[in-house]
Image (cartoon, rainbow, N blue to C red; front, side, top):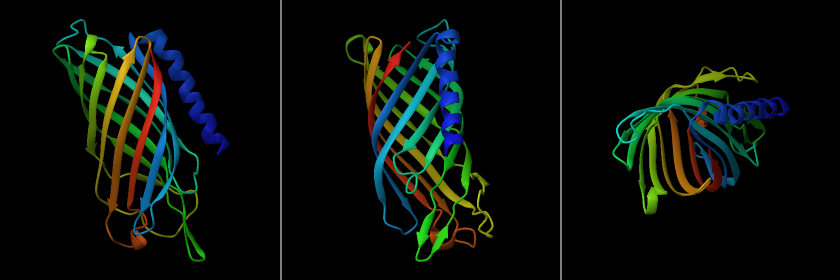
Length: 233
């Protein structure tokens, strides 16, 4: 746990230092809210979760209305109860295309590490692998209102078969992904150098019903409702 926290703090500090130095515009913020994790047929568990996130424009287009920006960023998710909820970190890079003064759309190439919690069934403990996931979510954002300070954003995409890392062997083969997806809706407002936002996110991984996924214990639905504030550089 201490090594994980040290690694996450290092990533965040590097990003915080890089944004003002190399990006022409960026955001760094923190969100807090409620997460609900459900594995297989087990009862869903709710709990508190915090998210530290940042995004910056690495290469900014000279055409603000019709150009494309190269963006990069990352996030850390830290639940209050890691015995029931997954902790995560991710880094990404992508492109944002502008369509007039209000609309933008694009995609991220994202690498995410997910530390799934174990499950206790009776007298047995089922240890899930930590997942390394390649994601390619797309997004659409609309800025509106006075000076276009309000924004509405939708993110979503399919999930791909993860790579599995076992810290404790369970003697089972890796499960095979059947399908998965992520969807997020965000509403926010920029107050000068600050922003506030709220979002709802749902994410689902369904693995095939075989020896690597006993009782569907790898099938995972994660729902997050959160809000937060941050800085605009």
